[in-house]
Length: 277
Ligand SMILES: O=C(O)CCC(=O)C(=O)O
Ligand SMILES: [Fe+2]
Image (tube, rainbow, N blue to C red):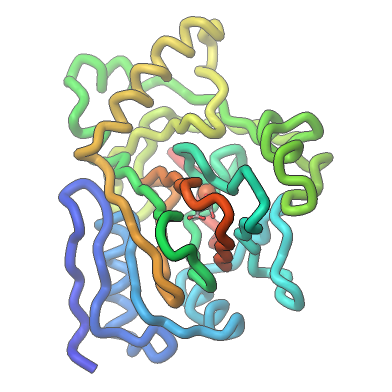
């Protein structure tokens, strides 16, 4: 196997990791991969034919596994969540810009998604870099955002009347657990690098602490429009055995729902994070 190579795929977000077998990473290779994850926000690997046990072992090198309380697990593997779309299913999981777990007091660090079966075409995932999105704001707006805190919730998505709960009967469960709200800095420091990140997302941010809903909506709408600019994003095309390993603090993602009538199955392991400051 050729030597490990990290190839950035865009200036704002993402890098491809070439020349590695993630089942057998040396300590030196692991350090390089972990550094690249911190720098680029999402890493892509190809042709990694991992068993569920090997997937768990690779993920655990980065930290403790967080079991998502809403997703249906893979049969026999309670720590792996299934991201599945049946042929006749209309709605997919993650079909809008969001970052996972921002509704938790201590948001998960990231997720490692492994493709099992993918449609012939379609079903790509978009990623956006929240460090680049933050950097591109004016100094004036950066100063305004600095003391603000975003309010995040899972209720409107995973709760009893939540969007995902109603649309994806059977694939999402445990609605009664969707009671937690969390408040996080709107400009978060990356826990490992200290880089400033725009930490709000259209999926789970429901307001700004101390602001009226209308005031918050105006500012959040602007920030969402800004962060969605194409130059902050990258579009990843999956093959079976592809892995995307993203950092929830530093990126957003968006699973495209453009493959109706075809089946898609991914396995997801989520890793615990740290409180955000
Ligand atoms: O299926 C995908 O590409 C991503 C789905 C998603 O949002 C997630 O697994 O967190
Ligand atoms: Fe997601």
